[in-house]
Length: 556
Image (tube, rainbow, N blue to C red; front, top):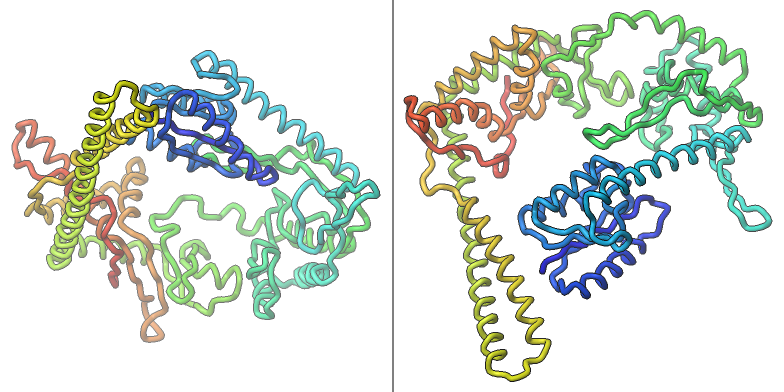
């Protein structure tokens, strides 16, 4: 019998020994069940409310499919998951693999446990969140921090007479408070946030997180009341519950959502005031005045190359400014890059699309390089898998010899010792595992002869022509953009080589990505050939997924 143990604790505030305690208790149960072969899966300080953010559980489910287990054991069902959807999905995968889910608290899990306990665990999470918010609200109304710390303040560490630690107290940090006053004074004097942070960075003054200052750190968002210029704590006013967080069911990540202003909790804390009323009012008036200048003219339609263009001088992202040109965001937001060059959006898109067409259609030498890289990677994988298969066959032969020796001893003895019987069980479990791994590797071995089809250049031309047409259609534009973006790792934009003229543009892509560009056309031809619709069939595993293909650079 092969078993897996899963253990998890959910908070950095909990002891890591909790994992060891769970594993020890689960091992005791497995010893009684007669399962000597055990694999351990753990998730440290990770919430049970999202499956996708737990690598330990993901690894367990992957090995459940690849290796196979007879039993999965955990301390309790809420260790497996507290989310109703996730716990049902995990249970479904375990039962589909013909394994049992056993917990120390509930025993063997059935559909009844999934329905009742899943609901109870979900309600527990909701109740815990409500109690936590109620406690935080009481702290804020008493003048203490509801969590986190703002630039310009430091956390007070002290203990009461009974030894209880005081939490949530803040006091002004004089050095940082002077920087806050400087930012407000300079903004009130007409200096934009980008120039303010450029000066701070030039003087080597560390930002709130210890790194360089960013214009958005100063400017923030007036709607969400974040950023130094919007923080009313500097006015001696503590505001809590401006936003709440929810987990995206697809990614498991937390996302913030603003709360209505009527739900905000405001407490006066005059001892934490840094900015006077007159300066605050002047700054807010300027922010209101400037807020409408570009508010309705911002670019909302995603551009073809958004997020791919980087500055060749500093490696930072290039973003669109002045509506239609890419500029270095590091220079604009932090002032730490000297790059002054910019490139029109239309110019960059035209050069990249034209370059891709030349690369994919007219470059026979490049196509041969792709083919050679593919052949080398295929040979490497074939050799690696054959080597692994040879080792497994040797291990399987040795295990079978051990089983034969144990059987001979048992048959020749009137009362064979229990240790021999346990050894035989271990060897049988090893044999099952080795046979499964060997079958998987042999099934994945590449075909003995796979060649690059001579019609690949034509497939290139068809794919490129199709993308160009799809880009012009608003309905198919997202699909075409995704296909083109998949070919590109990044686009490095540098200053003109002669001081004046067009910027230098270097496209950095991956050979595997460019090969993948034509895989759809190849697979379509294969299916048609195998169905007797004409054409000639050739290797469907033309692409070896990603491994072995290094990024390649192309000057456009």
